[in-house]
Each structure stands twice: as structure tokens, then as C-alpha cells.
Length: 86
Image (cartoon, rainbow, N blue to C red; front, top):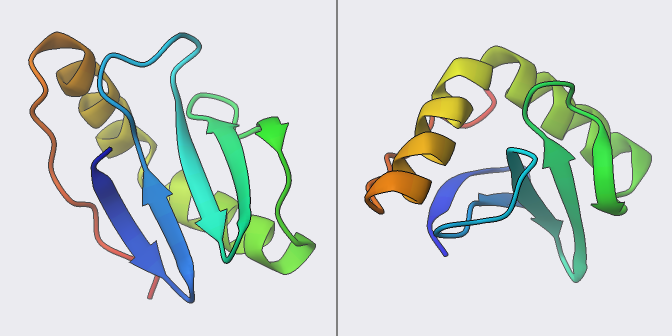
């Protein structure tokens, strides 16, 4: 489970050969959510509103990179880190 990025106590992960739709996992403490890459909609789980806002802000700036990681992880397991929210 590659750690793609982290910021403000939030950790962003993607799994190898994950199921569709394209998404990423965000954890904040013990809380976890799955967020769609294309719409940034919450798919599963929950995050506190402030953390969810930060995740959506970050993901909106990195959607293209998130999709590249998604495709690479499904194809050959390659991935790269994405800059944290500044």
C-alpha cells in the first residue's frame, strides 16, 4: 500500500491493483475514507469536515497525478509521491 502523500496529519494511500472506480484512500488518525479521483466524491467511510476539505483541496490540485498513479499501480505497480498540500 504505497503512501502517496501526507499533510496536516492526513495520509494518502493507494493500493496495488485496486478495484474501480479510480480512487485513493485518506486516513486521519483512525478514520479512513475512499475518495473518487474524477469527481472527488466520498465513496466509502468518512473524515472530519475540516480534514475532508483539505483532502479535496489537495486532490483537486493533483487529479492528473493521482490518475497516473492509479493507472501505473494497476498496470505494473510503479508509483510516485505527490507533493503535500502547502
